[in-house]
Length: 323
Image 1: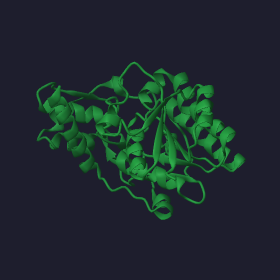
Image 2: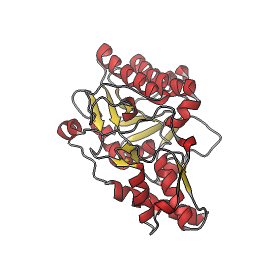
Image 3: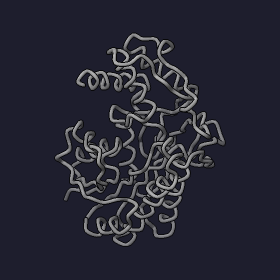
Image 4: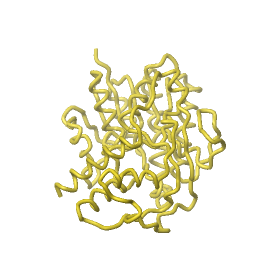
């Protein structure tokens, strides 16, 4: 029989790519859908899979609905991708972020424990947990020091996963994913903010792009590559924690340069530094060491930052031209 998977956050960037990946593996894919006023299904439609997944109403911070869903479904794997994942918003809505991003993961773990501890669980952890970095390159043994409410909430979810793994012998794994982007990234994230602005400037819809700390360095990869690592973790004989990254950093400045150069423009003529976009506590550098993932999972990133920026700019050029 085909395997079945439940994905929380199925309408997000990672949820959409993971759904397509699992469907390609022959899975039956179900997704937890928190009803919102805005259109949240556009990513699934853009990948052409909206009619191939089964959407189930529920909210992560409502334990009763999570328990009801897990109890009613026969699934082999659960991927917890849902979160309030925009770092800037976490400063404005810290309690909501803690409930959805932190306690929401605990709700899923508790629901699985009550249903069947043989169900395999994946928790989407994040490089933001490292925050104020303790070493130049971060791996699975690097100490955590989160610098935002989002990072703190994700750390709670991460340690909850480890705790349930050790306490109840659950196959519960975490992927400490560094920044991963795509044409499906939300417009509020800096990479899409940049590529959307490049498209609009190129097509004469706007003149400038306002950003904060453009000298921050990040380890950027392609989300379509990273979802394979999530699946590989749940196919291992034993659960574990894995850093998923490219092993290379790029500044926001250089990312802007690449995006503008793709359409024949100079970023210096359009980027404006705006202090309101600086964070209360900055994370200046994040650089992942994916050696464990390479050795144990046989996984490595295949899409470079230049190729990724070109892909995203081209997608935004098409979108803006259609408006």
